[in-house]
Every structure is written in C-alpha cells, then in structure tokens.
Image (tube, rainbow, N blue to C red; front, side, top):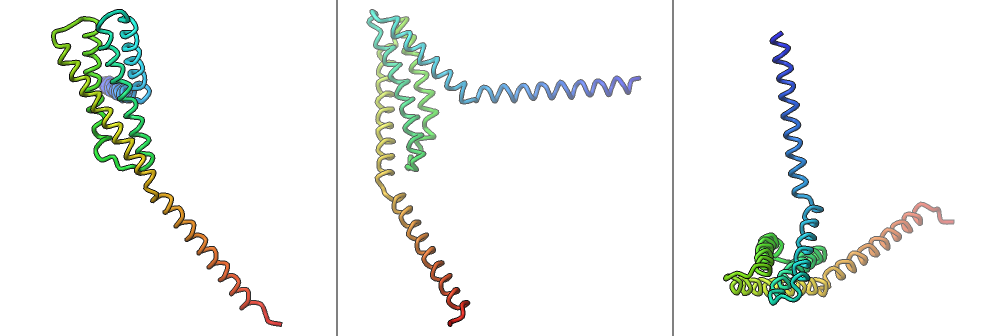
Length: 190
C-alpha cells in the first residue's frame, strides 16, 4: 500500500512540476511578446496624449507634450533602424543602443508626466535632460537616415545584379554554343 501511495505521490509531484514549469514558460513568453510590447507602447502614447489634452490650460502642458515628442522620436528611430537594416546599411552599434535609449526615454517620459500633473523642484533639470535626450534621438535618427540613403546610393546592389545578369547571359550563350557543337558532331553530313 505504501508503494502505491509513493508512486501516486511521485506522479502528482511530476505533474505539478510540469504544470508549474509550463506556466512559467508561458508567462515568460507572454511577457516578452511583441504584441504586449506594442500594447504597452500604445498605452504609454495614450496616457501621454490624455495628460497633454487634460492639461490644455495648464502652463505645464509643455512637459506632457515634450514627453509625447520623445515617444514619437523613439518610434521614428526604431522604424528608421528597421528600414536601414532591411536596406543593408551599416549601423555600427546603433541597434544595440536602442534598448538603453528606450529605457531612458521611458524614465524621462514618466518623470515629465509626473511633473505635468504635480509641479516639482526638479522640473528644470528634468526638462533639460528631456531636451538633451530628444536632441540625441533626432541626431541619431538623422545619422541612420543618412546611412540608409548612402547605402541605397552606393550602387553596389545594382552593380551586383548587373554582374549576375551578365554572367547568366554568358553561361546561356556558352551552353547554346556547346549544344550546337554537339548537334553538328552527332548529325551526319550529307
């Protein structure tokens, strides 16, 4: 009887361990999902837009608008990096910097939204930091855009395609000559 209880206990423990491990893996997958990241970003845009709209008559509306500009600049930079990567542009360590820039932008945006609602002593320092961050994002976006345009204007892709087409034409012509030669050797002259 104790063997049966021991076997059942082991089976229950194994099932429980499998359920816990599976739940943890699913939770981790959901937390890292792209859809959840997009939903968080949309919620951030929404909260900043609501804050800016709600404070229409407030003198601190500019802080909420600055937070919204920073979020838009981050989205624009991510989009330009994606376009540049697809174009094959060399971006150096810009893609590796994106997560750190995003974390800093989220921190600054949250601080700006807080300052817009509740004025604080640290507001001037935060506004300076936000303007510097926005300037950095715009400079980086401009550099990525330039790298993309330079990559597109490079012409190496067009030259590579032209070379590949020429090589294919040469191969086809050589094959046709070989087939014609083989036909002339096989056919009797008459």
